[in-house]
Length: 269
Image 1 (cartoon, helix red, strand yellow):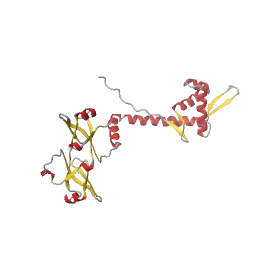
Image 2: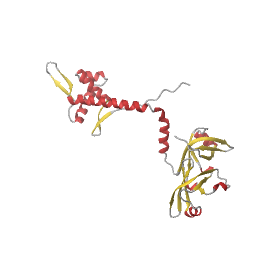
Image 3: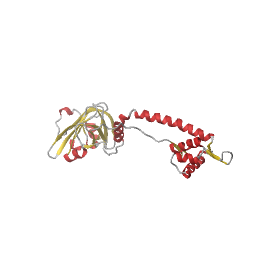
Image 4: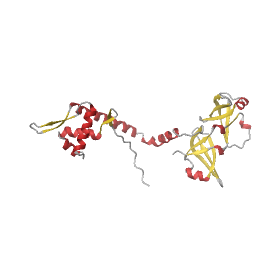
């Protein structure tokens, strides 16, 4: 399979006046040709533009700039012609300087084009909208196929692992494979908290240990933020009575527990 061609970053540059386009590459090139030829008809012909379109562009630039950029002279020894004013010449010079800086800027961005894919996916993840409070990005580390459902293990960047149970159809539809990117979503009310959970025997597949970093009591429930050993955080919603019974406090160790069936798996678009 042939190697893909390297990616390049391209961009367009134009100047605006009163929120209207004053000049871009096409109009600046037209001005440049007028300055060189002294004739708007020759300038228009050299860049493949009609005479009328060229004068329309000149009229727009003259009107927007506040002072003429191009002037037409008639009669005289040379039979008349078209020339740029000093303001028109300054506009070309300024645009060329800006154009060069723009070229250097794009060249600098292009040196980091290899990071584009990862950065783009990160932006997509950050812009994802969902009602699930807990959103974890990781990579599929294990797939255990069953008769109907598959067990998907997702390893987070800090080393923590989340297990989800989804249908085989979902596994295929999402294109999940070992090493592929995946996103695990868990609603906060689905997360149970426990202290001293090492001695508990539970059917829940997911046990993530950490310490409480934030408590926000409400009228009935308390929002608890648990920072995992790997650095990620988990949000749980428990009753105020449960928070008191567990003696939850900032800095105290706790374990987040949730069923694999409560984990929704997604993939970056």
